[in-house]
Length: 406
Image (cartoon, rainbow, N blue to C red; front, side, top):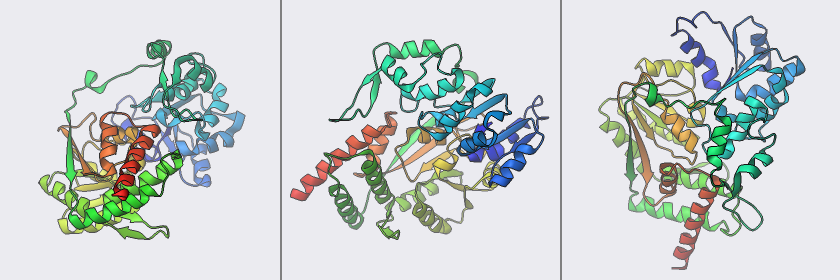
């Protein structure tokens, strides 16, 4: 079984104990250094678990002596890239696997192009083509493009129905609401207004960052670096070139504390992006008198679900997939937003899942006039892609240029 690291550590083993027809299964977890992984693989067990980052190592370890007749990929959208090492490794030994099962709540987070690699691992290219190029040529046409580059593709008319029909015999889509009763999910956008001093400093740093980039030749790499800095500014601090943290404002911290106060003791998950976010949040939470912790693994998730933690700080990339946290609370506070729609949806689903008894409330802290607003527009429209990020940044660069002239 291949899963995100934190999920492989404990989730599947814990879930198996809840089912009478599964609680006899034995597990061996192949995590840690190479010596520990090899020792785990040598144990006699029904199911072996490994994190997705170590799939290339696992394939290299066994090569053509691959011993597993069945492979389950938990969160298969992490195999959506046909250029990723993990996909190439599984593809190389696919003929040695009798059966593959893939699980995901977001099979095509950035469009139907994301399906090819996942479906290829199921059927070796029988339904959607042997290569990503043949799949793209058959069902897609260029959408947004530059002078020498196609940034995105869109499905040609009727292609989506054809794709779904081709994979209908090996794929099943099940909505939780069709089979279980889930409470509603409520979104609460909380505007964060910067005070005059913070606004002045924020605008200066934002303008300097924007004007350092030529919007005519902005690339994916420069866009990623720039948007990272702008998101840091919204959160209230930024890394300098020497790695030092420059404090910009505490307005978002104050908004978070007010939000926590309004919960009247109800527990919440707090999502942060950067290490300096975590440091500043931990310092600020000292004054609340609440019990808080940073998510690191099974120990924290167990304590959260047992009601022993009031506020659980999480970095979505480390726990946005697979974890069951619905027993510990029903509030998610997004202190640090990011452009990744899949990560946003999956993280919210850690609470909005079977067993949740209360409406799940998603609190988004949004700095007014900042790049936070661009991110929320993208997430709300369920359109999170590289070109949209670039277009939003170009608009901000043009605005900064007009401001500089004035």
